[in-house]
Length: 282
Image 1 (cartoon, rainbow, N blue to C red):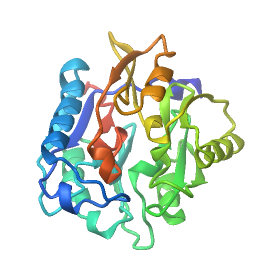
Image 2: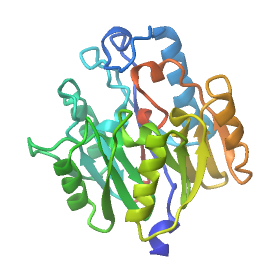
Image 3: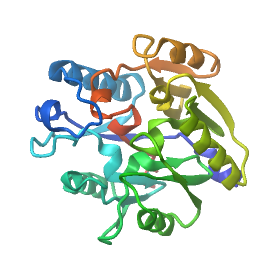
Image 4: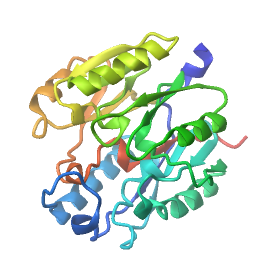
């Protein structure tokens, strides 16, 4: 099992997508806050710039599609592990066509494509937490049991456990990986209950880093050559108390990334990229 963990967080490529103008008015959301489109686009450019320039990933940037207001949230369209890409079937019908451009991009990267075609299945990538050892899949408004079963079938090397998501949009609305064996978790009661379920279901022991704000628990971990442990996390402007907690991670390169506008349409940091570790062609 240690071998499976060895490459955890190693990435070479990121697939991202532009923000359409339609996001401001038409993207799905659980709150009614007004989105400042120009600011959202600047935030997203900053995020992509970190991936490309600061971290040196090969960034594949798909164009925005005005008919798909949520298309910037590429994480929901695919789950990639190793050289296999599962093209999902998003829970919101208005988002199903987002998978087409993603499938094309992942095919171009020579990944093995598995498509979720069962009309009874729904799965959003935001409900999928890969720990490097196993998968946890949130059963939420967007992801059902059949979706989780198809994911388990696509990634047979790993155990897959399901976790009820009773509040919040996705499992990763209140948790993510902060490093090998480290789960970052929000402090709300639903988040802590979900963590307890994950701990009970797993054969592995995970450390936890609890942050006061559930949304701040969504961060992007990478382990990159010449950079080591890297964590993209919330800014002190958004979540001052949670930002302080990340400072305890002394071994990490900490990169605060602003997400103030996209959070208004339920977008988090992991939502905006699909990360891939592409082996060099020998």
